[in-house]
Image (cartoon, rainbow, N blue to C red):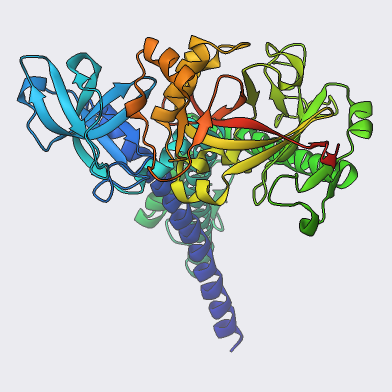
Length: 528
């Protein structure tokens, strides 16, 4: 009975010894499959000569929905037929629209978005064409930010390292189990056949000795020599092979490198999350300390800010504070700063301490007090969703209609920010030039913003700006305005803001949101 109980315990231990390595193998393999699955839709097509783009507007819906990945390849442009879809450069963006006509003699296409009522206003010149869309895959484009962002790449690296390490750990556990099983076999064989393998004249009582540290099998005998059974020779060979695999230097180096990658990536992720926590706590405390809400019943018809700011205390904390930006129903609720350089608050919070989240800050080249014709305001696109990470949401018409205005409160004047355009642009676009006074540059910026906007705000240029924009090649007829509705009129006397954050649709991508500053009768949220 006792022997039977002992056998059952060993069987149970062996079963458990097999289950854990199998679990590590399955988990590690699944992690590698996920990493490969996320990388394949982008990397393999690029190796095959495709360019991959993420669809961020609904101009080709329903066939190509927002969030799709489109795969574009160069083609003989003269052979492109009506109905085919091409990708082309339009300013700083890449547009995917369907070909209506191919004017080979002129070297240009007439194009149209499937969801648009009218054809594109300007023909697409051959030199602007990226290529022909070969295929598209819904939802895959939404994952492209993973490849583009630093945090996304770190997550992929750490997942791959974990997957490989789990498989290596499973292999090592199996090897250890096999060694123990062989040791048990030797011990059992020695007990059952103590004289097995002795040669003539061998010393009585000489037995098999297993050295676990060397993985070798030896027997002591006298002058007649060494005589080993086939089972012992087989076991010795197996143990030697196990020892050789365990001592593989290459595997050790790989494990060490993966461990460094894992620990380094985990450290970076831990630091990033810690910085997120510090920033969220700091700005949460700031809203508690310096912000108070107005009574909704006394705010009138939307002409008074829903919040008040104690700028006296806030500016005493940091004189670089120039305002507070707020959008109801969103995370945008931050002090706005302006330093001597744009690096001052790129990675420093509103108190001046280092934090990778940085602050919301005005371009150092702009005049104080939002007195320029166009003031540029920057904020990071944080993976935590903080700062200006939500700006890209305005690319959807429904989101814009829920959040058509923001509020900008300053120590001297409060403003309603009437939003009229949101779109992607290049970090080196002319939109980032500082515009102090109205003129052709302002007209061109506002006109281009209206043409490029991903949402429709029923805005238009006034007569003066429309004439100036025409001198820059922007036609007012390109701007869609709903007849019968009073449009948001953009005039030369008004001042504007451009909110900017990083995006990942293409290299040096930025998402910008334009708004008109409309003064209201309050300062810091308090009535004048």
